[in-house]
Image (cartoon, rainbow, N blue to C red; front, side):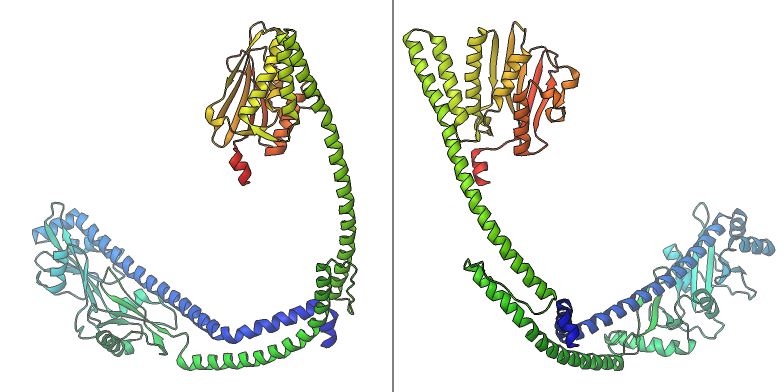
Length: 570
């Protein structure tokens, strides 16, 4: 056992987890036993509900059959006329009666009475007696105008019906024709309900006054009904804890009877005591075993973990020359090897980090040196501006001023600028092109005030406007360029429109979809599209289209709508 545990840390971990799981078993065993008991009781309750539903469906089906038979009798014109005239042919009435109640005659005894309570015929050989229309079940059926059942208080002999029902019969004009009397005997109910419940359960039907109507074990009918009625009157539960049987009960709406299932309890008191004793004994044994294993495993795991702890503390003090020895080639030994390899890699990374820092400093110095030339050009352009003003050459002065502003904007450290500032630089560039092209085009800015502070990448619009001037308006005498900004939800759309020659169909669509050969000569558009997709994702970028009215091209840049406060919060 010791060799098995020392060979693999995984085995020791498994043993430790097993021991730790046994300790909570002491606290959870009673709970698990209760859950098991409740589960079994729920299962038994579900089984009982299924039996009760089956009995209810059987009784409902029988009642529907009786109602269908009564409806057939009402639709039989010959039989209705015979009942109304009061002097029918006995043989003809009997034949028609058997034909109309054929689907229900095997369920119970069916008798036909006229509206005065005179008996006419029956589905069984014994003759019936005349009844008063004011007699119990006939009176209730006539008052309710529906099939009604009544359980006799004292059935008398075993040949007497235990459940009697009546359905009133009416003609097409609503006139009373008579009654269909339904009589259930013990044999009828036994045949109807046989097999509706399991072999281990007993079925009991009680009247609304909780008197026995039917029981699958006739010898228990009276005593069981008396006991349940006593409990109901005394306010006691029908199924007490620890008793041998439970008594689920439902009331059948069609017959008004209470359907009671006598079901054996899943656990009685003696069985529960045995289960509690066994569970407690097992939990005590498992607890003792878990304590012994935990002590042994804690001693085995303490030493290698302590060595790792000391080494980690040395690394925290920036001592990377430590080494963790190990005695076994198990998981803890492999962990020590990985820790030693990590220290070697960490030392190498520190050295590489220092080298990278030196290279970064050198690159920063070269960048600062490279910025000196643009500053020199800006100062030179300022000098050219003043000289041009002195010599009264305003065009050169304006071009120098605009070019100097553009250069200062290009070398500024900001990566994102307000849309207002971006359009100002575009306007500077357009002024230079006006001087160059002798003002042969119009330029319009359509920027809503609420979008002026939206952040956009620096120098994003200038290449698009330049492409519109150099390519879109080529050869156009009355050219026009418009820069338009619109908000669509959380998206900002910047569109540059011209009234030039337009695009061939193969160049329309998202700019990122075209081949590298197609981007030659349009490096500015390629750079802007790449910047947008790199910054914001592949769903953003440039889209080239012909204007809907066919008068030129429009290039649309889509990007998220952000403001300075949004960028600072991110």
